[in-house]
Length: 271
Image (cartoon, rainbow, N blue to C red):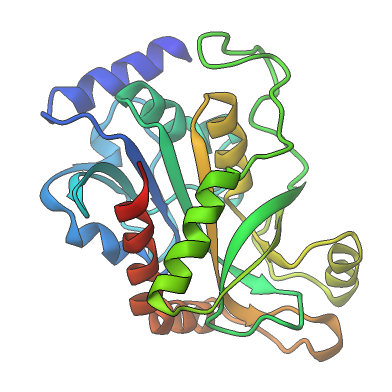
């Protein structure tokens, strides 16, 4: 694994002349933010040695490296999902690569279902904590000692200082941003009513199919994480209606201007 990571990093570094300090994982509906990066170097996943390739609609599958809001960034324009058939180690591989490229802060975004009645389609939510219901963990197996300890602490997986930055930016931009606990399942299906009741009962506010593996590996690697969810549908058991991916993308795209402005505001404030 470490040899593969080194080969990926060497290839990327041969194409760029900046050291990105901020990493962005752009979920459904937010990929266009990478198009605003100044002096971009675009590298398709398929061209990077050992890099997995996105297969989901709405995920372009490329790294964009350059400057955004005055900061050097590397953006994943399209993420990888467990339900695509990749292992947990595969879908978090890019986070390992980001660490070796010099990334110190990771902003991870997603589209999700809202289980808390206070939420609504189009709402943004700062992730304060998570519940992993995916049935797997990216740190299983041999520990990569060069990245972090065998048993990393996840009591503050979403960095409190970055959450405060998120709160400040929301206030400055007058954007309604909620806070809550994100739960993740493996997918690829939208949950049953009984499953939603269970997740809500154990403390989940939103539910999705990503983000937690990347957050775990980032914390293991010493990268500070800020997670932001875009609620695309209400996943409340009592009022649940049939859902299609096209509807999720429709709401994600409608929320894009607000979401994009919010993420850019945070990048500007990150030290």
